[in-house]
Length: 272
Image 1 (cartoon, rainbow, N blue to C red):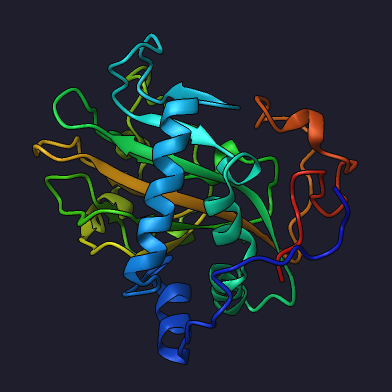
Image 2: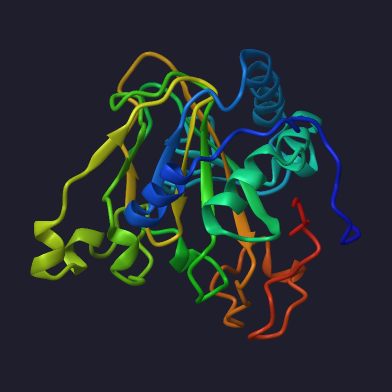
């Protein structure tokens, strides 16, 4: 795929005010309401339903299930490669421009998208963690957009954040299967005193953005309804390849950068 910016739908601009930028930079996360209209939400639901049926590409149970029909946290990566509805959403530019505004970047690339689905009943909580330790860069700056495709409450598994935790540095990766220490066990006394989880409930089409070092968590889905979210992870200017392949999996073979060079790869298309 060429380096050229790809055109798509979902093109209209959503305003990102100075107050929102300041909130993000101070707290490491920020909420936006009604980013997508109902038609756009339904389009993404259609694409996600097809993705769940097809299960193309990288698919796993984040909670360590056997890959059968009862995934506790179903994760599917890079849906934009296989499903037009998601491709239009990712390449249209709206959420990429929001990411650029929050980070002050002139250009934004996609690292990957991922669907995160928690069915009612057998789902599991996603443990407190940072995203940065799983990514192939040491420089902070990469960020995620977590888009709700359902009405997401605490009971249904909405995002929860620790405000300001993106200033605490990078911690070790946390096991989603319950092995090893919990993230909170790694904190110092001052950080433990600042531990105040903030749940962010969302309507369909609303979203949060969060910094790669921000502590976050979601409950198990204890309701009778599915919880569907579509996440897009962005690479702004100034993010270089760490060269240690700590995010091995599906992306290492596509990375074209040498250690210390700007993070580039055949799947990391330029959006803005």
